Image 1: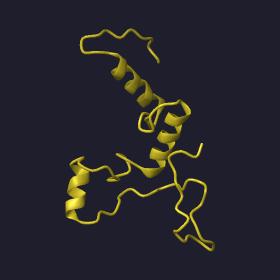
Image 2: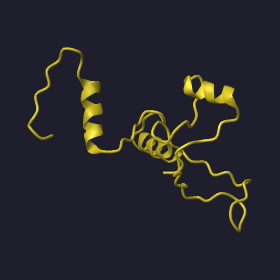
Image 3: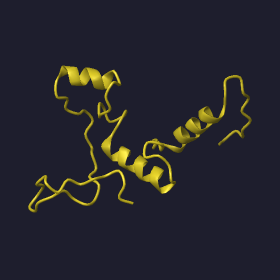
Length: 108
């Protein structure tokens, strides 16, 4: 269960030396860019990185990676969403094709 997070012991944090073994919770909304060119590459999806928490978040990334590894999948093959309704939506749009009929109960 340690996939997706690699603590860097060379980074001094707190009183001791090294990073915590537990995954830190990133509560940041915006992230720092090296320069405007770096920001342009991120927003242009030419480079992977954190832009805004609703799009990508380091804590969510670790969760997704760990779920994927537990299921034996590729580290980038999982997706975490905010609610069960979102999960149902993503499941349906990935299974259904254009023109398909979806039969369901009044409450899923």
